[in-house]
Image (cartoon, rainbow, N blue to C red; front, side, top):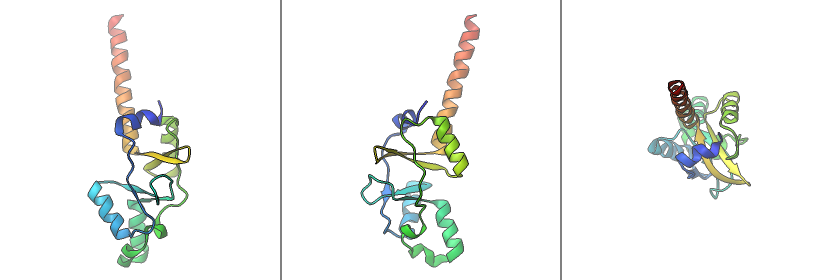
Length: 143
């Protein structure tokens, strides 16, 4: 099972924001779309960074309410872990668990092609386990 299977079901579209936009704009964007993170990209093709709710909360806690006027570039995570569509779901789970993050952009041939969250991975795995259980029941019932 690969990330491609999740993206085939979820979709490949990725919403991005420019690094020059403000934290206030990012807050509105995240809240309005019910997203937990946004990929930062100037043209929607490369990954310059990622900004999560956690990044925003930490920044406001450390710098006060005026931090909402900071540009995203000042707060975003710059060294973003990415994966490919061919990466296995189990490998992505390991990367997210070790890194302590909930979103991972998918990059193929240097181009942003999707994003998945831990919720997407869990949903996929739960469906997979249910399908396997049904197959086992059918096998036992046929015997």
